[in-house]
Each structure stands twice: as C-alpha cells, then as structure tokens.
Amino acid sequence: MKYLSAIIFSIAIVIASWFLGDAYVSRANPDGTISVTGAGSENFTSDLIVWEGSFSRMSSNLETAYFQLNKDKETVKKYLIQKGIKEDNIIFNSVNTNEQREQQYQNGNYIGSVFKGYELTQNVKIESNDVELIEGVSREITELLNKGVQFNSTPPRYYYTKLSDLKIEMISKATEDARLRAERIAKNSGGKLGDLKSANMGVFQITGQNSGEDYSWSGAYNTGDKKKTASITMRLEYEIE
Image (tube, rainbow, N blue to C red; front, side, top):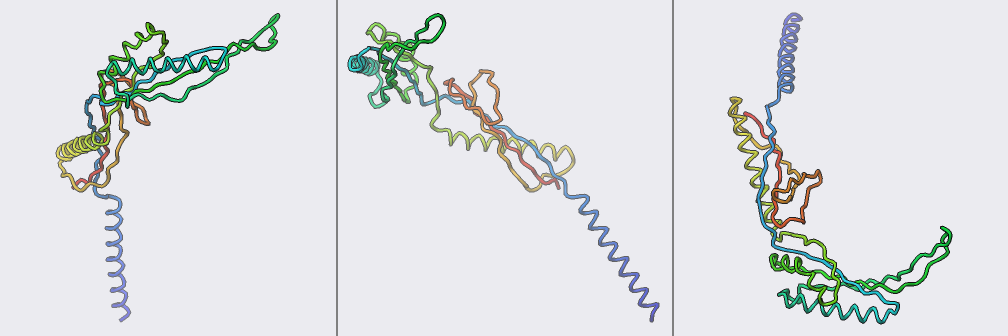
C-alpha cells in the first residue's frame, strides 16, 4: 500500500511539473505583435484672414492728440469701407496713451527728463472670410499716407475654420496607412494580422506649403502662409497570428 501511494504521488509530481513547465513556456513566448506608424497629409487653402495695424498722434495737449487721432480713425474707417471691407469686420480697440519724456544728461550724468507730449495709439483689426480682398487692401494701405495718416501694418495671419473636420479626415488617412503597412509586414513574415491592441495619435502639424518649415514636437501651427499642409501620424499595434 505504501508503494502504491508513493507511485501515485510520483505521478502527480510529474503531471504538475509538466503543467508548470508548459505555463512557463507560454509566458516566455507570448503571441507576436507588430507596431507600425502611418501618416496622413492634406493640402488646403485658408478661408479666414486676420490683419492688424495701428496709427498714432502726438501732442503736448491730450485733448488735441485725441481729436487728431479720432479724425484719423474716421479716415481709416472710410478708406477700408470704400475698399470693400464690411464695417462689421473692422474692429477698433481702445486707445493707448503714453506720456513721452526726453531724458536729460549733463557731463554724462542723468539729471532728469523733460515732458515732450502725449502719444495716443489706435489699433485696428480686420477679420474676414474674403481672404483675397483683405490681402489686396493690406498691400495698398500706404495710400493712407496721402490722406495724412501714417498707418503701420502687420503681415496678415491665415486660419482655417474647418480644422476639426480636417483633423478627423487626417486621422482616418493615417490609420488606414498604418493598417496597410501592418498587413504587408505580416504577409511578408508568413503571418496574419490579428486584432488591434492599441492606437496612439501623433502630433497634428500645420505647415506652409513648400516652405521647408520644420515640424515641432509640440505641433507646428503655421499662420503666415495662405496655402498650408496638414499632417498627422498614427501608431497602431496589432497581434500577429
């Protein structure tokens, strides 16, 4: 009886060892996976333009400076409307007032400052979907010099109002590109593409077309070019059967 118990005990140890060994091999050789990165890009033209500029007046009398600046404001407004810009698209900001003083020195030593006058500055911003019209006006704005207004203009900025829809389209393109890459790799390695394990979106980039602009780790967002290129990457991980 003792021998029978010993034999049964030995058989149990062998079976348990076999199961444990099989479990170890399974853990040591998990199902294969493949990671691929796909890219999607799209060229588009901006449909919103933002253009800003400013003009100023200076006088030793604050009231006089404000009166002159207000006249310039009406001249600028009338000019822009005559050029075809809608009044609703013209935004005048609050007036900035700066007291101008001239520093005085004697024998290289600072001895104080002398009041020169008040400089009042008016900023104006134009937002419009008529991109070509605003571009043209921004190039012709020096005509205001003939009307006695010294207008300082900044380069226009360009935006796209359908950016959310474009981003979804880019994600779809990048995902499809990654899936096709994964299928080719699986086929070439003699396997078959299994279930998708994970999907991670890369940085969404907007650069100027043919600008040679570098991508940024945080995402480039070009506003200086009317024609742009949007791009994004998707990293997918699949099981290999």
